[in-house]
Image (cartoon, rainbow, N blue to C red):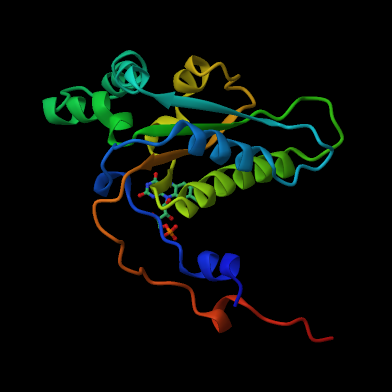
Length: 191
Ligand SMILES: Cc1cc2nc3c(=O)[nH]c(=O)nc-3n(C[C@H](O)[C@H](O)[C@H](O)COP(=O)(O)O)c2cc1C
């Protein structure tokens, strides 16, 4: 088995809850993002955008964008949950928000552009994990908030957050989770 196949068969995500922010080296971050940009993309439209959230912006995003949105939906907000919203992005050292931004009026099906945005997320995740960072692909509630999409410069009438890739430091090595059984998910077409 070659090294890449071995890595792909063994890699695991580490949940944002279980990671420590730590440090992501600037050189690594740039390389991770370059991997994210190199994905299959029908029509070469680059129908996605990556927003880097790191440093002070993690807390500011929580305070200025997530918390107000969270509070709008709560009649009696629980103070500890409100605190969690403020520090949500601070669970990681860097969060890469991938927005699918399909242009209107092109022949390529929108579904395929969203799939390409998913490929960006997966490449970012794999590249981060290949450097042994803790990484997880999350959407959580805020990815479905129109105001959050707008705050990130997106158009909520057509753009979608495909994922937020949390990247931090491992506290422990992950244990394996339940994986699909090959024969239950795979079959060969027999005509
Ligand atoms: C599009 C997408 C969104 C996800 N959003 C969440 C989420 O909001 N909360 C969550 O606990 N896991 C979410 N996950 C699942 C985790 O990223 C991941 O599948 C899980 O931690 C196990 O990952 P592994 O197979 O890479 O080890 C999401 C996965 C995908 C593909």
